[in-house]
Length: 330
Image (cartoon, rainbow, N blue to C red; front, side):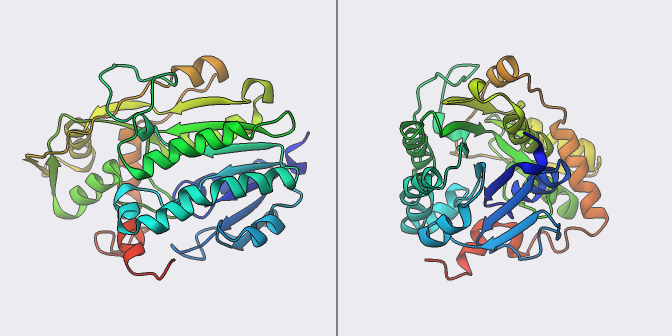
């Protein structure tokens, strides 16, 4: 089947990852429908003849079902996407991240969608002593955000059929520049601090954080769309690259931004340390990342220097929790 005939439905397609993924899909000849609340801006994605944008809530099953018609594949990115934002309104987080999931999956099946990719999270593993946390390691989610991600994985696998194939991705923390920028994830946050304040506050420092460049993360989804379905059905893949300590990330930021950046170590009770292995996706699908954390920092520096990220320390659009505090989403 040629790409020009494939219709891809992307929930949350105007979000941080979606804003990089969707233009790539369009460039490859796919026809794309983005279904998104557009709370971080209605002009994130440039107009394109093969792009349809629907301002919609995944909890609105009637609109969702109507919008899903005649699509081959779904990439489900939409969610309340980090712990602080989730904890701000747990009831809202549950309604979007968990309660709406199975009804959406069933509507996909009713509308003859044949392939569903779910963006879970590497945080479902919780704290692990193993050096290589692979996909068969037990799940011990620590927060409601990660617990609901794990629960949705079970729901999706339960709904798989011969005509409705599913794949689950557990991404590391994504970093780098996007037209819908986030500055509340560790690499981006430290880069933003260093660029504007010439000082980085490093909380603790020894905790490991798995990261993946946004260009690699979006290439993962394209790899899945282009891989034989028999290699994917019912499979779960980690998607990460470098497992670096927070201190090492800060030192890399200092290297890129400039020697005048000061590192200030601050004691922290945050003992969360995550590290994942991405060998399975390499061995089974042949996917290897091409971009480093250092490149992500360099990309952000260029974007800051060229004025693409104005007022990036203060503007709420760069910080999920600030945005959710100031909108009336129920």
